[in-house]
Length: 419
Ligand code: GFB
Image 1 (cartoon, helix red, strand yellow):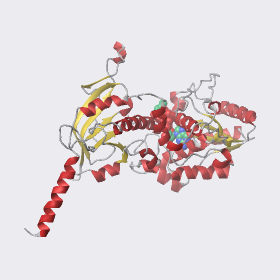
Image 2 (cartoon, helix red, strand yellow):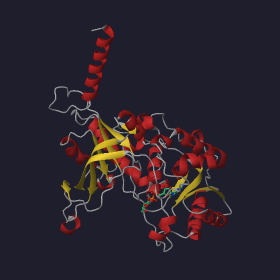
Image 3 (tube, protein in one colour):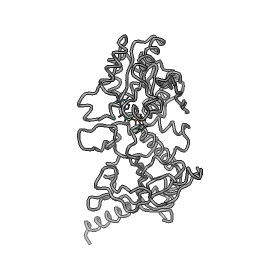
Image 4 (cartoon, helix red, strand yellow):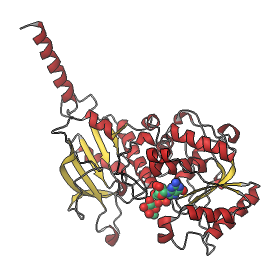
């Protein structure tokens, strides 16, 4: 046998061995090594951007916990980030695209908390058969049917009859397929899923309706680590910084809102001043229908903003809203004594970042204001409040929401940061 043939056989054996390392389980001799496994999750299609971020945090916390486990069937899991496609609140001029998380978030920062990968990286890492990728097992979470009748809110899960028709296409891709589908009645924290993962040898698992699973502990140190790691992409932070400098006389140096490069180095009690403006988040559109009693009229908004500006001796208000241009013009005319600012994205920005990019720029600008007023029970407002907590703002300047027209002034839940 010639030298070349021996080399080829050697390369083949090496490749075979390393490919099979991915599929070794605890009864196998090689299992002191990490086993590559992939965890996918998806969210109820009508849910918006900011609830999706909350569901991400639940799965990031689960992945962080599994990463630290000494069990090789758990610590090799990679969390595959579901691309941003077809969100109902976002307007698309073209077919749904699969926007990767790196467009909106700082992936290196996310990775310092959880072993995340983008979907396209999964495609690159995963063998294809006839140009299709197969997920080994799909579990669709559903609430226990009897939970409210029996009042049994114990943590439990059980493979069950599917109550809704199952989706057999995933993430708006037509080349992903799956081998086994199950419905899983579920009540409890997301970390309970570990029991499921220990009882299957599947190397790729998709959890549908991830929002059914709950946070293990809402608002504890680990929650805030996940939240702090969820930093926006540098491009979007820079665009927001340019707007603040040009229109709001606001920079991190002047406002004392500088953060360390790495979220792990952040410290409590930074006491920022914030930019010399009041920021408001005014949720309109579907909220005008679904929460008509709670959403204030623009006249009422103008009155509340005007009082706040006078009290703080400020002249500028920044408006983040999903409302129409007409609504913004009307509000501006009601506040004509003041400078009323709104971020308007260029066509080029919109075509690259879609509505999600505009939303993030709005959120960043709101989080740097000296004072913030949001919309009651909007997750868009919650994410701004969290970012202000991370920046270290006093809670009185953050957890404020608009009063309704019947003078009902709800209190925003105060979730203080924990280090
Ligand atoms: O993030 P989101 O789900 O928060 O809001 P809620 C839905 C979308 O509205 C965001 C746009 O992804 C944005 O595209 N949007 C809302 C905004 N406010 C603003 C804003 O100030 N500026 C910009 N640029 N865009 C949830 C809904 O909305 O409320 C659920 O997603 C459900 O479907 C629930 O209706 C009650 O928590 O406000």
